[in-house]
Image (cartoon, rainbow, N blue to C red; front, side, top):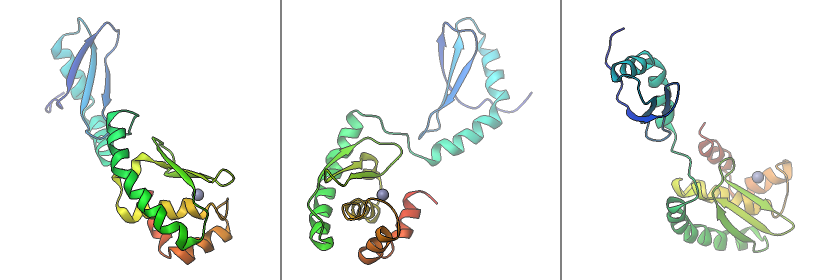
Length: 176
Ligand SMILES: [Zn+2]
């Protein structure tokens, strides 16, 4: 087997087999190896996985590291809060919806959610990493749920009225 050994960081552990992860966001390769495994053997093993690493890195770097609650999430919240506040103040009277209570949360599967009965909206902290027009789309979308709970024709017509290019924004936000 030839070719260069992909760069990696090594941690020795009390374990039986070598393990490897490619960090989301950075594409950094981290290898955990048994305490007594020879470095040359670890190099050979990593080299044998070069194609797999390459594929995983391309994938990993394409998307940001998922946010976990902590200092970074708090910093993003501080950044995002005034922005959403301003958008909500602007869009509530424009759409004629009741003023909701809202909060920011670390969420991985959704950009926002709305509880119509409680008039409460939750926005994903990850929106802090998105362009303003996409944040605005999510704000208008969640406010529209104060009028219509589901995503049916009534909902779509509210969106068409207030934010005609919303379908493009949705596609952009969801990475297609
Ligand atoms: Zn929705």
